[in-house]
Amino acid sequence: MRKNLAIVFLSLTFLIPAVSHAARDYGRSPIDFGGGVYLLLKYGEITIADDVPEDGSDIRNLGFAFGKSVNDVIAMEFEYTTTVSKDDDYGGTGASAELDTVGFFVVAKSTGDLYGKARLGYTRVTTDLEDTAIIDWGNSDNIYGIAAGLGAGYKFMEGGAIELEYMLYPKIEDVEFDFSGVGGPVFEDDLEVDFVSLNFVLSFE
Image 1 (cartoon, helix red, strand yellow):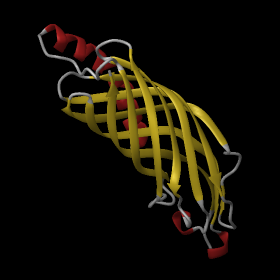
Image 2 (cartoon, one colour; image 1 turned 120 degrees about the vertical axis):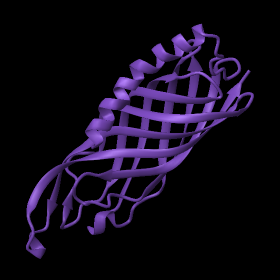
Image 3 (cartoon, rainbow, N blue to C red; image 1 turned 30 degrees about the vertical axis):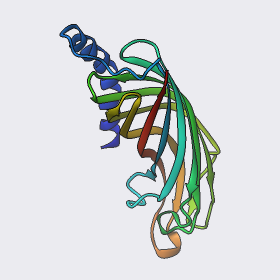
């Protein structure tokens, strides 16, 4: 399911600029955050999960992004988020989990006060993951790779907007689960890192 979402997000990253350009040609006003420089504050829940454990993690991250518009529909962003509430019992394994993210993104926005957006960029995910008898996180202190996302926003005043956003970060690979102590299997899995956040956008003239 998450793999399909990633494909959709990557496709939308290319489609939204084309749609926005066409809409502008028909007279719709594009999103304009003042002078093109803006600050984005974000807070939300990160989930580290695949098939096992099914309920994933319970991590809260707070962060920001600085953005600069390239043209009416394209912007560049630098983003940083950090864990403010970690998971102390990941999936019932007794392990703790928290992580920080930093990355550079290309952002595409559609037109109008109610708008859609897509993000594509390169990120580093820095993890603090505790091994236990059940789980071995492997060599996953720093994870580098492509991140992609999709969101929707509403410009409720000149220079201010609120957004709901979904991001998919690079996988945590080769995580080992050992349930032999309770008669279960020992296996490795790759875990997705998802981030659902509420964003507040403030522009600068």
